[in-house]
Length: 185
Image 1 (tube, rainbow, N blue to C red):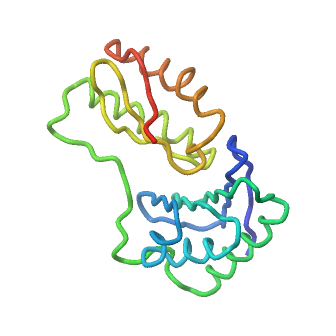
Image 2 (tube, one colour; image 1 turned 180 degrees about the horizontal axis):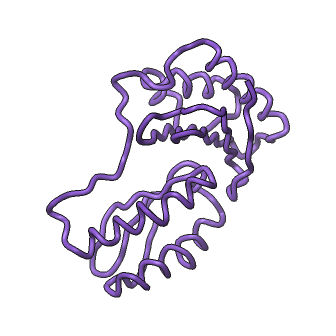
């Protein structure tokens, strides 16, 4: 088994591509070992590696975040080993009871919110997935779009630039009602 790795714009996160599907549909973001314990054998195995602080499972990739004091040169071989062990074990990546997180669309959304959600789904999310992350619509109020950043996007030093110069400009161009974009913690 050959696992490719890619650096992300976030120095605390690295993207691992195992060459097979990780999540059939949706994504799951684990921010600690306790939430992963019953939900994902893969994430649990990764959290057992000293220095791992977060695991994000996408369609065909795994984004692993590390503690600040940990060096990727030391951590990367252990993470690669844990991923390889997991796939060789035949264990499921997530348990059947784990629900994949996807942003919900609602018939109650007005035209502006539907347009914002569509732009995020078709233009923003695929682009940030390339960097091992995800951005999810959280709300629109008085001209402000609220987004939640996950995976490599969470805590990324360049996320402010992505929000302001990329996403905010895109949304303001297509949706004149948008005046600002803010990230939620």
